[in-house]
Image (cartoon, rainbow, N blue to C red):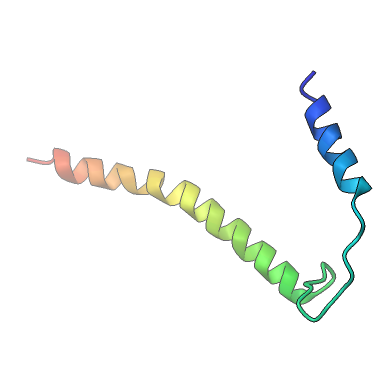
Amino acid sequence: MPIILPFAIVGSLMAKRRATESAGTLGVEDATFGTMLGLTVVICGALTFLPAAALGPLAEHFSLP
């Protein structure tokens, strides 16, 4: 049953017309797109991992006499 909603979204997107390329369009073959995608992945990973990594030393600091 949960697969119906994604299929409905895909069907809706397929029914739309494709937008024409303009000066503001960012192509997926471009190095800028790859750089932005890579940085987004790294930043999201860092924001997920670093707070948990910082909790250990902080907890140890506050538990010392």
